[in-house]
Length: 162
Image (cartoon, rainbow, N blue to C red):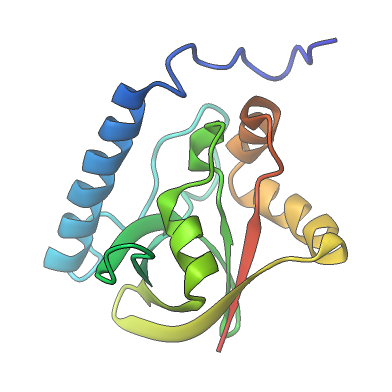
């Protein structure tokens, strides 16, 4: 039975073209963020249900699991002190994002929030942490509810600690 509060999954969400668009939009967002010190690209203004405070964007840097090169990804995040919590939703696509695969291979990451760069170690949230974080993450960005319904996979919550 479908939930009337959740829109139908976009038909092209899992297409290669959508993946390419996400990649190039991410690169443009990262460039703008870095070029302006976060004055541009540090807020996510899209979303079907988002009406409150606009969630912040930070830049996650991982090491490519195949290339060994630094890879940067603009991501929504929840910050609790020195902890950063990330969601590997990729907009509800059926596959995990590349940044998630990279940090699984090498959990040492950095996360840039405006003028601050945090050195962190990433790990998957356990079941009790997932239960505690989903309500906070959904309050921060209500479209996460849609993404979980669309993905057809358990969307990882990643906890990054110093």
